[in-house]
Amino acid sequence: MSEAPVIIGRLRAVLMGKARPYTRAGSLSAIDKQPWDGAVMAGLTGLEGDEQGDPRVHGGPDKAVHCYTWVHYGAWQRDLPGETAAALLRQPGAFGENFSLEPGLDETNVCIADQWAVGDALFEVSQGRQPCWKLNDRFGVPDMARRVQQGGHAGWYLRVLRPGLVQTGDAVRLVARPHPDWTLARLLSAIAERDCNPETLAHILALPLPPSWARLFRRRLETGQVEAWASRLEGAKSGT
Image 1: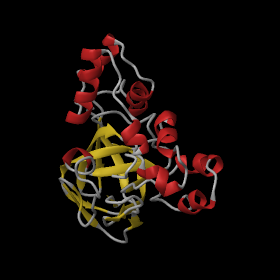
Image 2 (image 1 turned 135 degrees about the horizontal axis):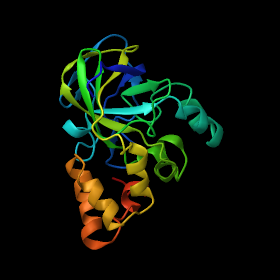
Image 3 (image 1 turned 180 degrees about the vertical axis):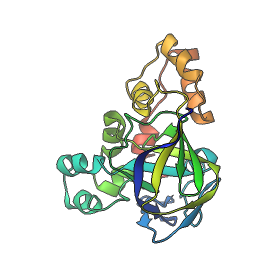
């Protein structure tokens, strides 16, 4: 894009959390993110002071910051049963997000490799979220992770191209959109709908994917088969 950056959204909240023992034996999680008052440094591996419970699958340069749009909360409030879910959905952070975004940013209008200027930092959209069983336990809804995946309301991750300070209220400015045809909704749908079409997969593999997504789509192209989801969506029977 050659034009000046345009404001596409705003940070409703910046949130962080500490890794603590979770609901199943041996598990840790920092999914309980709480609003942060004031500026915080966004570094190459995330917000300063934020933690992840399982660094094998969370955090790192390609998952430095997790985003979730506030606009989805209304639908979840209507659809989810139980007081646990209702209490979580009264404020940002229910999905473990670092950035709660408003007013209208969501998976349908955010594209892979979009670059955003927020505060003093520069970010790049790296991938959509693939939800795991910890959402089931957090919300008290046994199939919550599957609902998130199938509905496409999964959120997404940012990598940090230029570290800097960010805070609640900062504008989100779109600096570059090199792949306007490839929204996160389109990519997440390809995963959820078990797409193994070779032509589609070849187009996806030409995108600047993080290693985990490149492996996923390459394996589908090579084998014509879809990866197993049970462990991620439901968790091991003994707890992980």
